[in-house]
Length: 74
Image: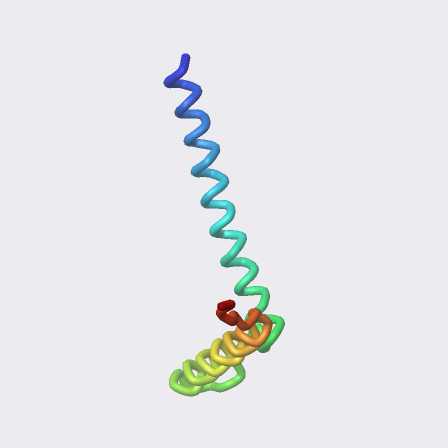
C-alpha cells in the first residue's frame, strides 16, 4: 500500500513538473510572438536567422529592464 502511494505521488509530481516546464515554454513563446511578429518577414535563411536573433535580443533586454537591481546592504 505504501509503495503504491509513493508511486502515485511521484507520478503526479512528474506530471506537474512537466506541465510547469511546458507552461514556461508557452509563456516565453507568447512573449516572443507579442514583441515580434509571429512570422518571419525576410525571405532568405540568413536574414531570418538574424531577424530571430534580433527579436530574442530585444526580448532579453525588455526582461532585464523589469528585473530589480540588487544592492549590497552593509
